[in-house]
Length: 260
Image (cartoon, rainbow, N blue to C red; front, side, top):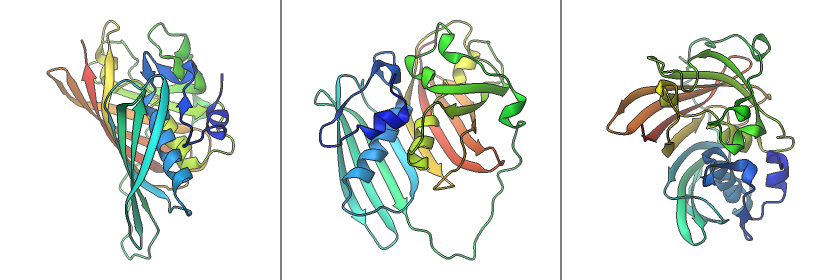
C-alpha cells in the first residue's frame, strides 16, 4: 500500500498515474488525493518555483478511475499572484477541474485572526479509531490515523451534524506540507453522514479551500466539518483544520450530494 510519500515520489505529470486501490473511495479517486495530485502537477510543471499555495477551488465532475492525466495551464502570472488551472482526465473524460492561486507574501499593516480557541484537547487526549475497519469506510481511510475528538459519529442519526477528528498521515515524509494538508483535508466523511441512520451514497461535488498557513507544520491536524444546510439531496458544509498548536491552518466549504 503506497503512502503519500511513495505515491508522490513516483508521480510524473507527463505520464499520468494509475491510482492504486488504496487511495480510492468506491469507483473513484478519493477527492483529497485527486486535489493534492492536481497541486503537485502544477508545482511540477511550472518552469520556476511557485509562491505558496493560498487557495484551491475543486470541482469533481465525473468518476476518476483508470489512468489519470493531469493538464496544468498558467492562467495568469502577476507580480504577486500566479493563477493555474489543472484539468484532470480519466481515460480522456474530464474528471475534475482545479483553479489554484499561489501568492507571494507582502508587507501589510492589516493582521487579525478571529478563529477562536481550539475546540478540543490535543491529539494525545483521545484514542485511535479504526475508520478503515468500518463496513462503510472507503479504501483511502487506511492511509490515515484518526482520533475522534467530539461532535457526532457517522451513521449515528445525529441532530447536530458535526464531525471533529484528529488526523495524521501514516506516511507523508518529505512531502510538501501544503500538498500533504490538501491530501488530508477531506479525509472525514461529509458531516451530513452523521445524520444518516443507515449507510447510503454521499459524494462531494465541489471543494473550496483557503490555506492560512502556507507551510503548515506538524503531523496531527484537527479536522472539523459541519453541515450547515441540507435539502433536496444536497448539503452545504463548513470546514476548518487546526494544527496541534491551536492555529487554524485551512478553511473550506464543500457542496455534497446526498442520496438518502
